[in-house]
Length: 306
Image 1 (tube, rainbow, N blue to C red):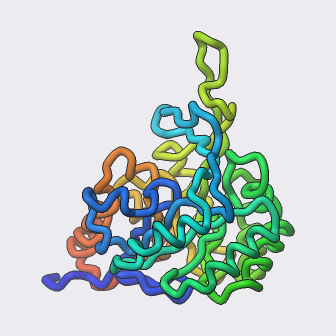
Image 2 (image 1 turned 30 degrees about the horizontal axis):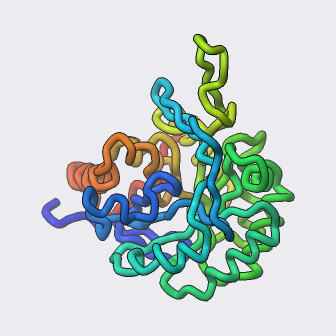
Image 3 (image 1 turned 90 degrees about the vertical axis):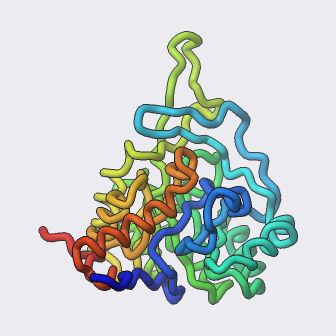
């Protein structure tokens, strides 16, 4: 096949030039990577989690490397809505890649207010609703732990915005499919999963936790098999696009998620190891399609043979 394959995908009404997105919290506000990555080649950018007011996050130490992974307890540190609108959006709007704003709140009213205020900003492609962070003491994961509370927060956001809504799910639950169905019923346009898995590390010399928060979220290659299984399960249970996240380091990793049914992927921890990981993955997916004589990426999405 001489022509380049068609790799465009659609996520809840937003067309992406390719299925590779950046994962929230691992790519800053994009400007941090502008001298390392051609930002205009990305399928989409998801910015660092945003709250109404600035947040300092958890005290250090808050990052610990583990075998095949990374534990973080950043605690959703961010600049807050006002500074984001004034200082970050002007740069993001110059890019050719669409951007999604990841939001979180301590209660339903904060989620709703954030959504309402972002709804007035025309350049935002969509909102990713974080109901799944495992390293904050209030909000976030509490909403994503049960179908009922997940439904409530997504419905609260849906009532305040017409923007495409992507909902980010937690793996720290008993029935991921039930929660996926509930957020779809509440008005989600797409679902992203998984967020990090709750974990901890101990310093055997001091006999103290290595993280000041004691526990944190595990990401990286160690969680990929779990993420892949959960993505496949959710794909079987919803009718909206699913975005795969978790340990995606290479094009081969991304292709596994696409074959399992994900329409797109988010690349997270890999950005810390190889800032060009997203570009390498985009190019690797295209090379795979060319080598296999596949003209359209849609031919491999959900092609898993079971």
